[in-house]
Every structure is written in structure tokens, then in C-alpha cells.
Amino acid sequence: MTKRSMVYMLVTVVIILMVTFSLWKKMDELSENRPVTTTSSPTDSSLTTSETAATDAESDSTETEVKSLYELVAEYGDLQLVDAHNHDASGFAYYKMQRNWEHSSVDRIVLFGDVSEPSAIKTDEIAWGAYQEAPERFIPFFSGINLLDESGLQTVRDNLEKGYFGIGEIAAASTYSPALAHVAWKTKDPMDGILPDIYKLCAEYKVPVLLHIDPPNGAPVFKLEEALEAYPDTTFIFAHINAHNSPDNVESLLEKHPNLYADFFAGFTAFNPESAYELEDFVPVIKKFPDRFLLSTDSGYGLSGGEEKAIEGMYRLMDALDDRQIAQQVAGGNLEELIRIQPATDTQLEALRNLPDMDRDLTNLTKEEAGKLLSNNKK
Ligand SMILES: [Zn+2]
Image 1 (spheres, rainbow, N blue to C red):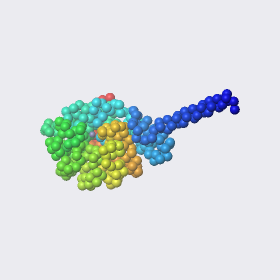
Image 2 (cartoon, helix red, strand yellow):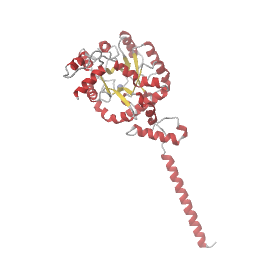
Image 3 (cartoon, helix red, strand yellow):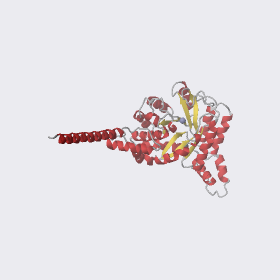
């Protein structure tokens, strides 16, 4: 071999080695960039997250069992999901959620805003305004009540007459919640202040009251049990009953008190690292009381993915139930029933009678029907 051909050969070998190395590096980079979890941080649309999840499922055989949100919405989106606990009246946050609710098939929203403090009066009005714009989507509740003063009772009566469908969220007891432990109008426990009189009004108007109680055990819960027994005709909803609480506790409360409903913040159990339980742990108690659970997002409180992640949690719970009939009840049917049983109020009937071209028979009209007729008339 000549010296010249030796040089050619060396150069050729070096070039081959360089090309091989750069190809290998490129492939390595590609595999590193591939998403590996289905719970990667959400982008501005929850469906984008689910598309990522779908890609995962195809590319990684070990994750084929995890359904993407996209698949879950396709499977359960026709069940008419209602979010039973939502704070998006605060700061008009509901505006920017509209598209997301459409994409993830959330049909209706129990809407309110701030809780048990003077600023809630304003957010209650915002919730009412949202309902006037879209009565088929929003179910307004209110929370701006001075629970420590008799004057609060007039606020309650006025709002119920006006057409609100429920009271809450109410800070009936709070020791540890960073959001509610120090609000101005919170009560010591569920029998404090004007709460007992509010429970009487709830029974009169057939509206539920949504109570925040933390811690979800000990003295505040004994007081809740006292209220449940003293006001058997009032429907109480225990807000985010699964947060920092055990399935056994939830079961024993529901067992003892037929007028108690459970607001289930699925996103907490599914995604909050503070949860000691998994969704599957609550499935037996939900199946035992399928007509007493309501699904909610709590606007994604405490979740890194926010409300979108909380919506994904609701779908994951529906899937974990593995029973479409029960999923339908929990996802919205039970809440719809609580709204449907409310009769039209005197104030609503009076307003309807005063409409110039009202020819409809108003006997047995529900609050929901009356509210729709009145809001359509304003448009
Ligand atoms: Zn809340």
C-alpha cells in the first residue's frame, strides 16, 4: 500500500466514524424528547395534554392501559357532566373557561365565587349575571351572607326568592384552610351564628347548602351531625368530602344521615400529592350510595394543573366506577335532581304574571323553568 492510499483509507475511516457517531447521537436525543408520562404539566388546552397521552399509549406498550383525557371525553362526554362546586365567578374566571368546558364536555356548572366574606356579595352577583347570559349552563349559588348577624337571614331569603338554586360555599368551620381559616363571616362550627335558621330556610325553599368543614373530623363534624339530625328536611352537601378524609369516615357519615350529600373533588384524590388515597379506594362507598355523590372541580384548588386537571380527575373517577349508570348519577344526575325539585318562588311567579305576553300555565312551575322564562324574556 502506498503512503497516499494509506492516507485515503484513514480519511475514509474517520469520515465513517464521524457519520456513525452523529447518527447515534441524533437517535439518542429523539428518544430523550419523547414524552414518558401521561400526567405531564398541562398546556392551555387539556385536550393537548390528552393528545400527548394518546401518543404515549401508542409508543409505550407499558402504558396502554392509561386512557387519555381525549378518550375519556369520547367515552363519557354524553353523560351530561355537571361540576357541582366551582368558584369561577371570582374575577369573571368563567369567561376564559368556556372553551375548555366545551372541549371537555362539561355541560353545567354550579357557580359562585368568594366564600363567607363581604367580597362574596359581588361575586354572587357575577354568578347571577353568568346565569342570566347562559341559564342552560350555569347554576348560581351564593355565599355573601353575614353568618354572624341576623341581617344575614334577609340576604338569604331575598336571594332564594330571586332564583338562586343553593347556598354555598359556606365556611361553616375552618382551622387549616389557607383560603378560609380567616374569612370575616366564617362560623365556629355548623351550628354557630345564623346557620340553624339558614337550614330552616333551605328546607322551606328545597335548596341544598354546601358546607366547607375543616378538619373533616372531630368537633366540627360532631356539630354537623347535630345539624343533620335537627334539620332532617334540609339537604346538606359536605364540600370536598374526600379531601384529607378517609373512605371509612365518608361511609359512616352517609350511612347515618340520609340528608347528607357528598361533594367529591376527584382531582384532589387523583392528583394532589397530599391525598393518602386513590380514586379506587372510594369506589366501594360511591357504589354503596350512588344517589348521594356529586362530582366537582373546586376550580382546581391546590392542583398544579388547575381546573383543567380537576376536570380530568372527574373523568378518571367516572372511568374507575366502571358502571355507566352510576357514573351518570354521580357525574350530574344527582345534582340535576336537587335542582329540579325546587318550586318557582312567589317573586318569580309575580314577575312572570307581570310579563305582557305571558300565556303559559304557571301551576307546578319549577324554579328552573321560571328562571329560564325570565332570563329569556330579558334578552
Ligand atoms: Zn371551594
